[in-house]
Image (cartoon, rainbow, N blue to C red):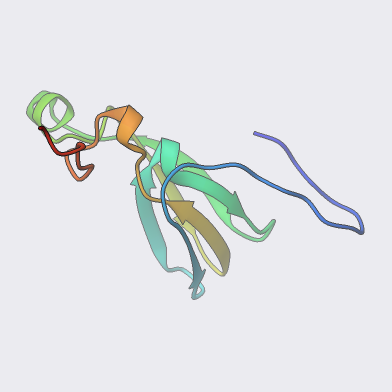
Length: 94
């Protein structure tokens, strides 16, 4: 993770569709760790174990969640097809 500060523009590369969400004070957002793109300094960021072994193996997400707690702004992206997301579509076969 990189901390960016100062005046000017910064460009970030991420896969999938990027969405921005404003979290209210105390509001929690749990996402796959690979889907966090950026967040403001006032966000409380933590990593949590998903839970049971069945969830970790068959849930399609992974072993850990990023837990972001407001207030603040979070930018996240949808999982990219290269990660093997169940929501990713494959090209049509001929």
